[in-house]
Length: 402
Image 1 (spheres, rainbow, N blue to C red):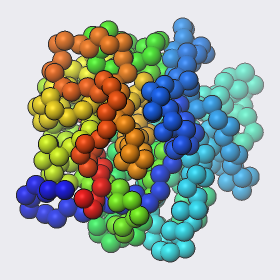
Image 2: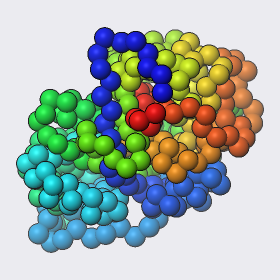
Image 3: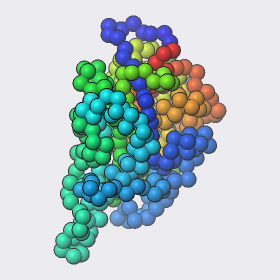
Image 4: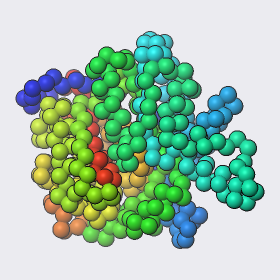
């Protein structure tokens, strides 16, 4: 792989394990199969989430593991969802602990909802009976409980923290992990995210008129909003080479603070984040083979992102949003889509086709959407996550040894 001239050395962060559970599937194998099919049956319409009406959500339907009674104070659906993914890579995590020591591993994770759904259920009981149910404690829905649960479960003693910057949360875990690794503070970092469905989030987006009751329609002129999805995804990172060469090559962020909920109309912050990621990876735009778009299917986000992508990449790099297969997983969206990128690279899958009604918005810049069977032609891909408040993250994954 040719390198773009830069004034610092690009440092790949190798991915030693990856796991996820979402509407796309409850294992890497199932996720890969559904990516190939371009269909997820777990994107479904349900009532009961909104104060009125139905919503189409991405739901995890697999049975979740129980949390041992010794960790009862961490017991929430969000943590059980997280555990369902963590158990997929438990041997690799335990091997890292054995190799490096429990104090040389960090846990850096992200969430938006944490255990809010459990809090909603507990509050309903309190309204009926006058007291919270047995076993409920406010700690279960605190954002920081997520990271503490993982550290307690695996008895990891290194740095532990939970990031929450809306939809870019689990993108930021990679920037934090890279800093810790480069500084020599730890030898490995377990990064991840978990977000479970809850009424608070669904009604909040419904109040913003940003929620669709049909399958989301990214970049279509008929797009009408997002689908919320629940998910958990994790990666084990280190600077030591793995067997596949698949690594985080670069990461970039920005905070344009244009508006509390609307993106900058010209994509200023998005452009900055993508350019910083390219600079960090020492890559030129023409060396990127695929862009996993944030692609929420809202009017403003899709327009902004298309402008930003066109400004940097023109109409030559294949683009698609995978949110019709997963829903928007909130704070977990970034690492969920990073895991999809990992699958593309590790399993050498065809690029995900852009799922929508086929009526591409003619007012959008003419970026290059994936419309049919297409192989990755370059050794690197970029994944975007753009959040409320203009908090933006772009991540570049690829083969570090090419």
